[in-house]
Image 1 (cartoon, rainbow, N blue to C red):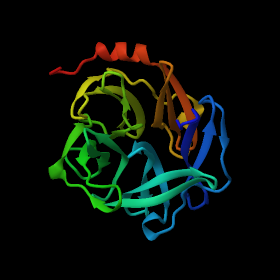
Image 2: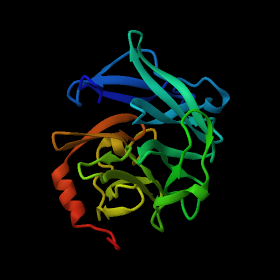
Image 3: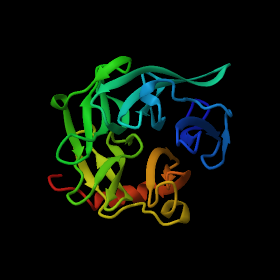
Image 4: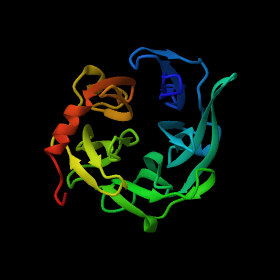
Length: 277
């Protein structure tokens, strides 16, 4: 949401469908449900060899008072992370690349947060044990060539045994008491996406509560059949008047909106505190 109260949605779109190359576009809404395209031109397009097959999976956070996009750079063989800031001036919306993550490769579902004066990267490294899960890593900067180490990282959510993988949905939402609300997608065999809600402590170190059942599952035609079927992929969320507006990819083809009552969801989480809390 910008200073004027408009909701800015950065979405993935396929340009050359026969090659399936991803671009990023931008749309604007006054109420969160009806969106207008800002421009026919993409906000961000592939420009280098490491982005040859697309730029995708954007997550937006505010860093140093400015909106930052953490996005995936895909060259078909591997994925890396890129950082770009959004500029909205007399020239319109623009994305300016400012940095990238060189290591680890094959990480995605990522966003950068500021927490207690420190930059943290939430991401899903494919090769870090035991299974592809959600990790938090210390990050020195978002500018230029960066890397993170497993030695300065910890798992926030470990994919349950028997599941394929998990990943962060939207960047965590800061609640009034300082805790965070986090949506997590978990993929069950063979490739079915489920979405859970979790409550994370102020330091982004421990999950305090986790819904016992998914809060979103593939049900509609758009979710059951698409470019990738059985997909509900949460990517953005905001809190407006005690409602959560959750934007998610359906079937890897369209963007849909799910709405939840924040107070009711927190009541459910209060009844599903994890062991140790």
